[in-house]
Length: 336
Image (cartoon, rainbow, N blue to C red; front, side, top):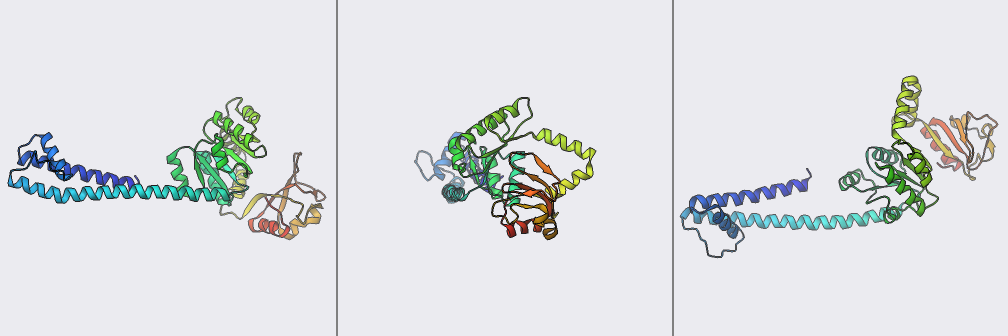
C-alpha cells in the first residue's frame, strides 16, 4: 500500500469514527433514531445548523460542542489534504510528462522495448547495466510505476499505435524489441514499426506456436526468438556440457567477471582496417582472442586464420578482459 493510499485510509477512517461517535452519542443522550442522530451529526460537523433539530440534554449540548471543535477541524484538515494531494499529483504529473518528453527528445540510436513483463524486464535491466539507451512502452499503469521507480524512460500506451511509436522516437531508433505476451500483438507491432521505419532492426518474441515465426518474419522481424525453445535447449546443454555452459554464463552475464565475450564493428576509421589478423597485433598488444569474424552477407567465420583480412563492416567476435576491449575501441576508433 502506497503512502498516499494509507493517508486516504486514515482520513476516511477518522471521519467515519467521528460520524459514528456523534450518531451513537445523540441516540443515547437525546433518544433520537439512527437516521435523526446521523442527520444531526452531519449538519453539526458541516456547521449548517438548520435549527429543525437541536440537542436538549446538557451532555448532548456538550457533545455538540465537541463535534464542532473536533469534527469541523478534522473535516477542514481532511479537505486540505485532499486538495493538496490533487494539486501535488497534478503538478507532479505535468512536470513528469515534461521531463519525460525532454528525455525522449534526447534519445538517438536507441532501442525501443515493447512490453515490461518477465522477459522485457530482464532485457531492460541488461540494457541499463550495459549503458545502452532505450525506452520502454508498456500499457499497464501498475507496471509503468515500477518502470519509473527503476529510473527507465517509459511511455504508457499500446506499442502497436503509430502515435506511441513516434513518441518513442522510432525514426531515430536503431532497434525495436517486441516482447509482449501475445503473438498477434507482436506481429502487429512489427508491421507498424517497419511501416514507420523500414531500416529499424526488429527482434520479436515468439510463443513457439507452429507458424508464428513465419508470420513474424513476414511482418518484417529481422530475428525471432522463442524463450521456451531457448530455455529448453539451454537446460539440455547444461546437462550435456555443464562446464562450457558455465563458461559462457560467466563471460556473457556475470557482472563480477572481467573476462567477457563481445563484438566490435570495424569502421573505415579503424586503424586495423584492411589489415590481416597478424598485422593487427590484436593478440600481442591487447591480449584478446578473435574467435570469429562476421562479414555482411556471409556466414560466421569461426577461428579465423592469421592471414584473414579485416574489412570495413566486419564484426569481430572477441574474448578478452573488459578494459582491454574498451582500450581497442578507444585506440582504433572502433565501435559496437
